Amino acid sequence: MKELKKDIKEYFTHRSHGFDHVMRVYRVAVKIAEKEKADLKLVKAAALLHDIARTGELNGKDVCHAEKGAEMCIPILKKHNFKDDEIKIISDAIKTHRYKNQLKPVSKTGKILQDADRLDVLGTMGIARIFSRSGELNLPFYDPNQKPAEEYESRANTAINHFYEKILKITPDTFHTETAKKIAKSRYKYTKEFIQRFLKEWEGDI
Image (cartoon, rainbow, N blue to C red):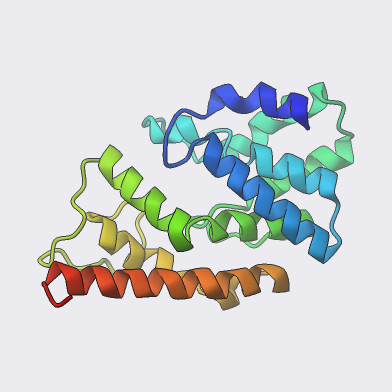
């Protein structure tokens, strides 16, 4: 996997969806895979490649990074001598990992990838990423006059609204594996407590 890591670093240039995010997803995915007795080779490759098309999407290209990434990963995996059946599983896992698309992965690899990716939007890392991305987009932290949308539309108008529109809907029971559900409980609780404290401090109540 060392050579694969080297080959893909150039694809990640955004702070909130950079190579550090990929490596966190990779490490958590490996831990889940070990607990769930999944194929580590497939899980590792899927985790490393899952956001390979994200930079293009963030730069304004009219693409879905999950669908595009599912295509882009194929020649890369062939270069690294993955078999056709392995490539199919990895490509399908990448295609179904995205929250916005609301697709349900079929393979164990896909379920673990989606779990690991969603865990990175919860807890301290998730909070840091949301504020980092809000800075990139020049969005305010919070505006009490801007109410959260009923449905998630890929871009909130404030950082705090993003929590309400997307993050808090990723509850522990929405994860596939028991291992991820256990991790999610702690991270979800921390995220909710952070928002509650943020709003109190905003109003000067703490």
